[in-house]
Image 1 (spheres, rainbow, N blue to C red):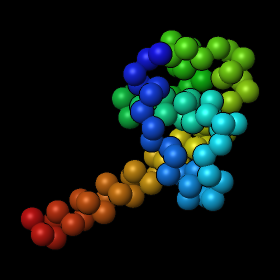
Image 2 (cartoon, helix red, strand yellow; image 1 turned 30 degrees about the vertical axis):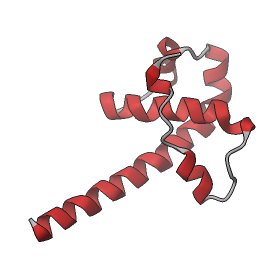
Image 3 (cartoon, rainbow, N blue to C red; image 1 turned 45 degrees about the vertical axis):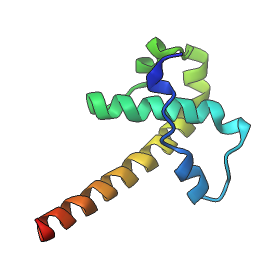
Image 4 (cartoon, rainbow, N blue to C red; image 1 turned 30 degrees about the horizontal axis):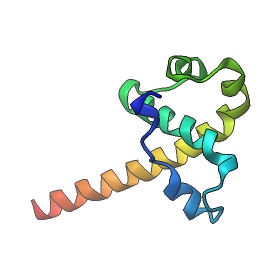
Length: 93
């Protein structure tokens, strides 16, 4: 398994919406983590970008929408956190 897909970035999103981590979300979570990493690296991630990371075309078709939504929420939360940290550094720096 590729190390990029082993980082757990999204569980806090699942906890925030009150679902609690469940096995049925594990494939979505794995894909969302790769989407996040690729988006940070390349600025964007498309379903075909996931193929080199062990996802099949069938998986990307079935899981893309939910995983992409999970990744989008997490990326937005990361952006908000980064802007808060920047604001604190500007005020106290």
